[in-house]
Image 1 (tube, rainbow, N blue to C red):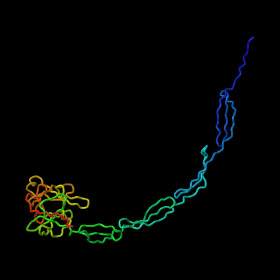
Image 2 (image 1 turned 90 degrees about the vertical axis):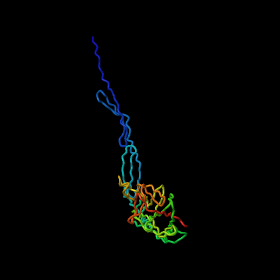
Image 3 (image 1 turned 180 degrees about the vertical axis):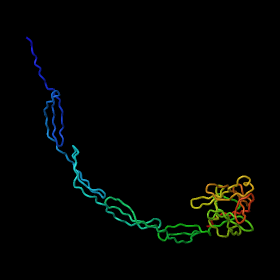
Image 4 (image 1 turned 90 degrees about the horizontal axis):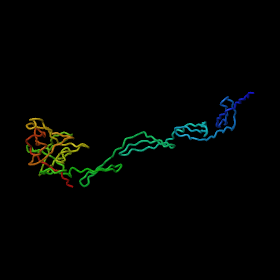
Length: 295
């Protein structure tokens, strides 16, 4: 007698958990991996939203609003929206002074934003002058600013026989019993006749006639630019026999020396000819007059 075995199929379950959300409940699903049969257990209710409310106030340039946002799922809602307030400018007028222009400033009382307009030019100083101790003192009658200039009468130019560093000089060429001062008027070299009495220049000396000797060079300043006396040599044989150019330069300079009433600029001597100053191998008698402060 044979024995018959009965085969019984058994479910093979797998499970999956669905977490609860704000608007839906959670549960665990059990599913047979062999036949697909399933059932549900561990059911829990929906969590519900957890809202946080934030109110943003309107500013001058942006609108305001209230927003609610769920901290669980991020769903949000915006309401109670308002328009931007707009700037509330307060205007202040700044009057011009002697040195600074005027303007009107506009500043927002809410946020501090500002701008300026209606610019006006500076008034400029209104100076009057008085003489005091060899100086001409200028004072602005409006703001009291002042400065002084040494009076020309307080300076004399006395004859000397040598150049001394860091001193100012009037350089004269003596020809035909007359003195001709070397000038740099308008940054051009020329000569101007001056009068001399008892070793002192007695005619008016302007800034155009004054040269500064320093570092073996003669120069003067025009604003922030320094100009040097410069001997621009000719090339070849002309450099020996010809007449080089006496000129001014802001980048080059020539060494200057003085002895026996001869002023040497570079390799050439200063001379007077045809109502002009020039350079040559022969010299015109030169006299130096050094600036002296009499006060």
